[in-house]
Length: 279
Image (tube, rainbow, N blue to C red; front, side, top):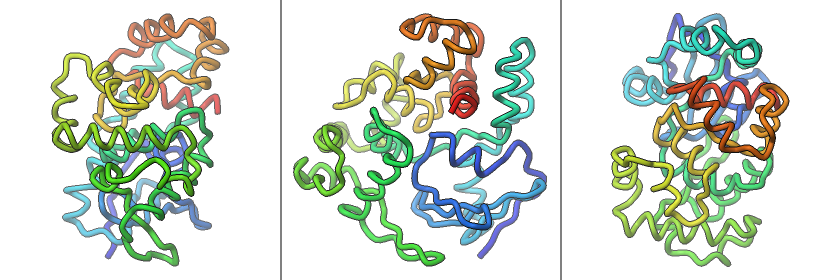
């Protein structure tokens, strides 16, 4: 099965899958990417306005991948708006011109960004795959790769942190177990997601979960809740804001204020352009 969407602009698979927003997609020799997402395993490739998704029906594209790749948003217009009076942003948006913010599974973003703390991208990917192989259900084989699902909150909550020792998560292991238990106590991921979407301050509400600090909360808000105004700040972003905008690296509050004033509702997208640019 294969679905081809024509006339897709502002899309680059390397930019999308290598900008730090997702960790389970694997680049292939032909520059396509294979990954498990939203309960499916697919291959994604793009060339000259043509987005090709293997192992995908037209119904899957309409019901899953159109939203997943945020294809309803005009990123060209968005980039022009962000760059109009900002030469730094113009350079960053040009460099990462094909970035789109993925609308990812909420529980996956929670697990992924708890693991991401004080970690680099290759190691984050390795840790997540180890957790999936250790505790997740098999999804099947595709193109010579064996894939496993992320453990459900119920499965994760049934574990002790010692059960995750082979995954080499360090201090993050008890965070995952405790957060899974909190998630179950509050009705599961979908109930929590709905609650957070209605929360006056979703960032504060997310920090009620074990192991979720301000940066992780902002990432979950951006990638798991679709809050495009979230502006995650880590060591890379502190360097960006210092080197490119002259804000002191320790002045996180000043960085957030700058993002709110200059990037507004699209702060999260601006953050991804800047993050990819400086990295």
